[in-house]
Structures are given as C-alpha cells and as structure tokens.
Image (cartoon, rainbow, N blue to C red; front, side, top):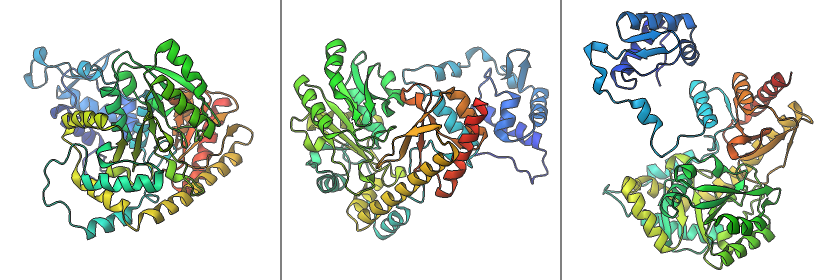
Length: 478
C-alpha cells in the first residue's frame, strides 16, 4: 500500500502529485473520472488539506486534471492530446452489472481499517494471528513434500482432503458422509454463492433468520431472490412460522446458522431443531445449514449439527476452516446429495477450474495431525477469555446502557443499546475514537443493536476499544 516518504527530500505535495499521475497513467482513473475531494484525500493520506491543494495545483498546471466549481476535480479528458470520444465510461460499468457491491457500512469499515490499522477491530470475522495455528501449519508445510504435479485437480476437490473430511465429520460432527457427497470450496461464501446461483432462480423466495448474517450478503439480492425472515430469540430461530411463509410466499429454501448463530451467538433449542426438520420434511423444503462455529463451544462439547439428525435428507451442510483455524487457507466444504455436488462442481469449474491443490493438502494433513485437537482446546480457552474481557469492559464502561445474552461459543457478542442511536453517526464517532464494530442494521435489525466480534481484537486492546466505543456513544447522546 502506497504511503508518503517523510524522510525524502522530495516535497510531500510532489509525492502526492506523482502518485496520482501514476494512477491516472495506469488507467485506475480514466479520462473524465472524478477524483477524491481535497479534504477526503488529505484525511486518507494524513496530511494538511493545503498539501493536497498544492498537489492538485501542480497536476492542473500540467493539464492532467481539471476543476470546475460545483462538479469537483476530474481527470482531463484531453490529457496528452487523447480524444475522449471513444473512452469507455468505466464509472458506469463499475456501477452496473448484476452482482451488487458490499453494503455501505461494510465498505466503510473496510476503508477505515485500511487507512488506520491501529483501530481496535470488533468488526472482522476472522481469527487473530494469536488464535490461528500458524506454527503448526508452518511445521506441516516444512515437513511435507507437496504435489509434484501442479495441474488442475478433481473439480470436487482433492480426494485425500475429502477422505480426511469423511473421518473428521464422523468424529467431530456426528455426521456420516462419503467422499462423493463432499464438495471442497474456498469457504462458506463460495458454498452459498454456488447454491444461490445454481439451485435457485430469480424470483424464488427463501427464508433466513432475523437477524441474520445472510442478510448482509448482497449475493442473495444479486441472484434476484425474495427474502423472508424467521425471528430469532434466545433459543434460536422460531420454526413455527415456516408453514405460514410457505403458504403465502412458496418459499423454496431455508438458510440457517443454528450453532452460535451469527450475529446473536444463540443455539437453536433441541425441540426447535426437531420441529424445523419435521416441517421441512413435510413441505419438501431444503435446509442450508452453515456451521462455522460449533467447535468453538467453550465447554468442549460441541453441539451436533442438524445434518447429524436429518433422517429425510433435507439438509445441505456447509463447513469451513476459516473460523476454527486459518481463513487464509481458503478451505470450506459442503455435504450434499451427489447430484447436487456434481452440479455445483461443474459450475465452480466454469468459474476457476478448481482450487489450488497445495492448501487442500495442508488442510488434509492438519486435520489428521496431532496438532488439531490441542489447537481446538487452546482456541476455545482463548476465545472464552476474550469474550470475558469484552463483557467486563462493557459492564465497566456502559453500566445499565447495554444488554446482551452471554454466548457459550462462537466469536460474537450481540448487544442492544438502552437508547437507539443513528447507526451511521455511531460508526463514524467510533472510528474517530479508535474502534470499529458492525451496526445491527447490517443484519436486518432495527437501530440500537451492535455486533462486537472478539476473535480479531488483541486481548490487551479490548478494554481500550470498548472505552472508545463508550466515548463515541456518549458523544452522540450528549
């Protein structure tokens, strides 16, 4: 990532001007495209606005950019004598297409973290470096010889990894599978993308939990699906409303995250599990079960997935390494009927010709190594420790101002503020106070809810982060 060299003899304004000119010459800012405002660019780079004003003046003097009152600063359409008549309107292309961008709040959080990595991160869903099995995976990689042939692999995924997953699923998830019923993906996101694109059609109605992680995924809207919600309380999703949704909207699929649900951290109660499976079976509805957090059960007794008690073949099961080991390996899996696996494997092959075989080899070896179980034990202990630090900080900084249900596993704490505030204003105030979180509206909730993810933040920064959040909240109320 580019940054100013404050030790250089070249003036800061000239460094900025050279950097912008380079980005223009590379086509990142085509002729006619709008540049960031002087104020915004100054904030991004960390300089006084006057420095950016001077840089823009330099570029204007060279005819590279042009400014008009009320319309901002744009790249000159006649730069170096080039005619703009046949220049593609890249902004229009970028705003078009059927695949929607991430939600604005999520883009803002990503932007803030890229600009200031020192922010206390209660937003990101991945494990912190101190929770990942980095040394174990390094040892595995250094002690094994990897594929002598690096061509395309089986479109369903590396066969030894699928075989290792058969054993893993039986031992840890109480789930019987065969290697032909498993599809290796790059994670839960790709599994969900393949399902929405290949098993559903535009206009189809689906049911998701409310609030729900799925609500934050534009891929559902991109696929043209109609989304209907099933309320979640402290016992998880309420399945008694499924029949009504089916009768009224002819829902075709149910998406659920029953174990330590994202964002609420709740567990689906046993009686509701059976009710959900029975209702789905009677109506012939598929259930998509995303199960990333079960092995983080702090008591070391992971709740079994719906798939393990599914006697009618209603459930497609999705799992991933991202929340329990290493998101950078990009390894996930799906257990489904073979006809579905073959259909999705064919679609995925059209996208990318399959995953890299080397991360799949590493994942297979880690699953079957002596490292796996001790890693899970440490992960649970450390996650619970971070959860407790977060709760302690909230009780100290916001006594009586915030409510939450204490989760027994997972990465998230779902909180309700005693008095709702504007989500956008609260997020911006939090960023100014050195912390990021995810507003509840991202998951379909009303204003006044927030999700704190404690897996990413460093333990020693959790108290500092909540203190910053409290200052932000109080600044809006005062």
